[in-house]
Length: 105
Image (cartoon, rainbow, N blue to C red; front, top):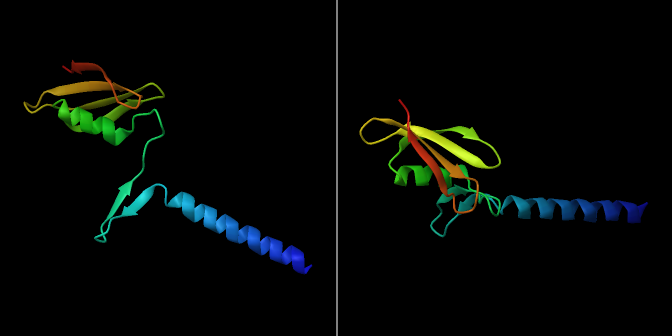
């Protein structure tokens, strides 16, 4: 009885330690000045939404929102500096390659 209780206690302590270690791998991260930032790295070999949105901004598309997403592509729609509507599509790879960019009438 006593060994069973101690083994359950050890297992629960191990599970708690493992879950806290996994939780610290992504999410809120603090720097040395006490500032916290939310950061989750994308899976290896994939493009995440924030990286693709940053690339859309660098391509001249502002106020963009995601309109389509699947395992192969991410498509954003937004406005250019002139106020024209534009759509841009990125491949779901680590470098977020631009596949297509078109004006929307």
